[in-house]
Length: 213
Image (cartoon, rainbow, N blue to C red):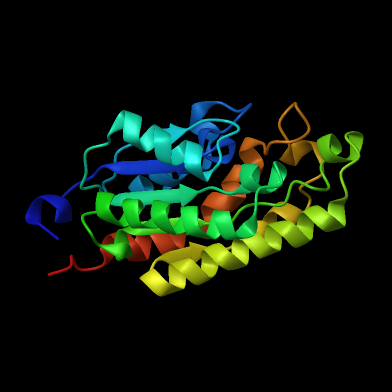
């Protein structure tokens, strides 16, 4: 990593509705909560630059990165993507391939240092009020989410990228009003805080790591 990358305080958050925080204030999203928590621990990090939109699949996120052309290197790059691939019934093999391509791009944007990349697992939405009202099979959604997460986790292992499994947290009280936005589908700031708390120690370790040669 270059000296410029090693001293960077910039943070790029890539994803979909779970990153942009559909239905909650910007300050309540998990990337903004994470940046604030890191600063509270004495780690200098800017609020995130966010490339995320509700509904995006892996290929749509890739196209958005092409369009926005973010300029690294970033001190930290986070990636959370996959729920809309699962929601639309897109193939697991396609997700695996496109996720790997996104992970490669995230690493490149982190100055080619995989230790500056943080991946969060896809949460489980299948038991939310929205899912139940729309007749979705919660058990099927859970199985598919687990399969997508297993693929992402394995890919992260291949590249030496940190993977934070927040899916069990999403299932714990994730159907209760205080953990949901008004739409009965997306998380509330309180749920995002729980995700942030899971990611925080990992992010601290990443940002305190020595820069790559």
